[in-house]
Structures are given as C-alpha cells and as structure tokens.
Image 1: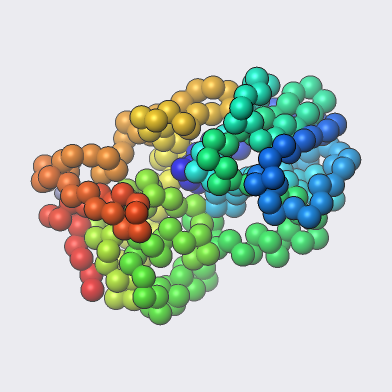
Image 2: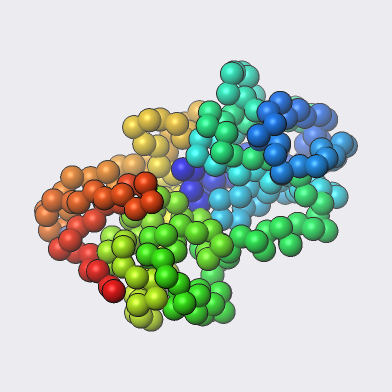
Length: 267
Ligand SMILES: [Zn+2]
C-alpha cells in the first residue's frame, strides 16, 4: 500500500490543484525520506505536469522532477496541518503539499530531467501501458524465473504497479495459485494475468483506491477510497464464486489468500 490505483487517484486530485503554480520553497525534514538525494535543488519554478509510472508519482518542473514514492504508509495532503508524521512540505503560490509518512519506507527523490528516463527505466513497464514487446519480454523473463508468480508480480522491475492487495485479486481472477512456479506458466496463463491486471487496476481506479480497515489510505482531499467494497479475495473468508473457505497463507511474510477450488497450482 499504496499501489498503482491509489497513486493514480492521488495524481488525479493533485494535478489540477498544483499544475501551473510556482514552487516557492520546500523543506524535507527527515533524513530517511531524503535518503536518495545528494542535493536538494532550489528554484524549481512552475509545476508543468504530474505523471505516474507504476507506484511512482512524478512532479515535472522545467529542469528537475520530484519523484514521490509512498512506500507503505506515505500520504500526500493538500493544505493540511503538519503533524508528527510530516516528513516534507512544499509551498506553492496558492496551496501547499504535505508529505506524511508514518513508517518512513517512502522517499522523495530529485532528479534532473535529463537523467529522469534512466532513473524511471529501472522500474519495469507500467501495467496499464504494456506494449506487445513489453509483454513478450515479461514472458521471457518469467520463463527463466525461479520465484513464485506472486513474488514475480510484486517485483516492480518486471512490471510495475501491483502490490499485495491487487496481486491477490489478479491471481484469483486468473485462477492461478500464488505459489505457482513462474517458469512453468504458459502463454494462456500470462494472457489471463495481463488481462486481469488491467481490469483489476482500472476498476480500483474508478473506485478511488482501496481503504482498508486501518484507514491509512485516504485521498489528498480527505475522502476515502471505496474499492474495499469490491474486493473478491483479499481479506475474505469465503470464495464468492464457490463459497469454499479461503486459505490464508504467508509468502515472504505477506498475506496471500487462495481458493483452492478456483485457483490452480502450476508447477
Ligand atoms: Zn472458489
């Protein structure tokens, strides 16, 4: 958390507010949040655009961009009060942006626009924009991969955007057990994975993301996502297709939900 749909929902709200405003000053008051920067450039000027790749939010100025990664608990607020979890503040002409992060896995990175592509290429292609060539490359990588399909999909270098909640949802829809061997998946399995990755993420975007019971995710305007009401397997007790009891298991300490009747182990 937050995953692609949450970051996209945040982007939709911050874009019309901040684009066209000048960034007058900012401060990052936490070492960890600032950990990837050797310098913090001044005078960035007017915000020209807000973009997203996978889970990374990209504020583009004339010469530099600011990349926000929200980690586990990062949050972007507009004109809200600072609090003990506030790690950075950005004061624009009219409005200000506050970056809060309780667990501090998130970061803010400054990158010159010349080097931005190199940086963003370290992240795999965005799931909502996969080309035929991207898909072919992912399949090739998958054939040589020794990890489970769940871990393969969570690795943002393969393709970017999925986190723990949506990977559970995608594998349920694709009828694939999360501990299946990636190298054993065939073309049809991948077709399903690509199809449902897009469907699951797009419908979560329509619902403004998923706010779980911990209520940590909400939008910069203070409203909550509603996709939690439409989840099929994450945090559920029974399969809504076959009513079978859903198994909860941990893969690398991350909760995985499986219906053994509807999802098949490939290995
Ligand atoms: Zn089932």
